[in-house]
Length: 107
Image (tube, rainbow, N blue to C red; front, side, top):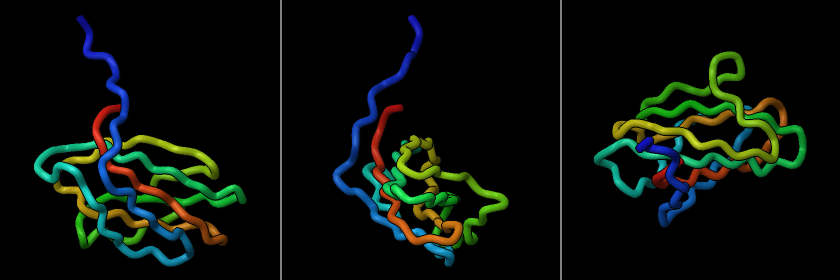
């Protein structure tokens, strides 16, 4: 029997992060800090807002458009992060928008 995918189950908290031209670490509220987990990232920007993200600890360096993961406008992606991940750094290219980080389990 293969493992397969498990539906994403959201945690109790959604972290709202403003994406703009300045990148600073933002704390994520997690549902189980003792193990790896999934984070659903949603870019609500209907305008051409491309945001770039980088996960890490409270000292995560600033995200950059040239080196980090892009989140396209009006899209959502799920990432698996390890137990040491507590923060995210976000930057956008030009415009300001909102990203939602929902911690949970599943894929």
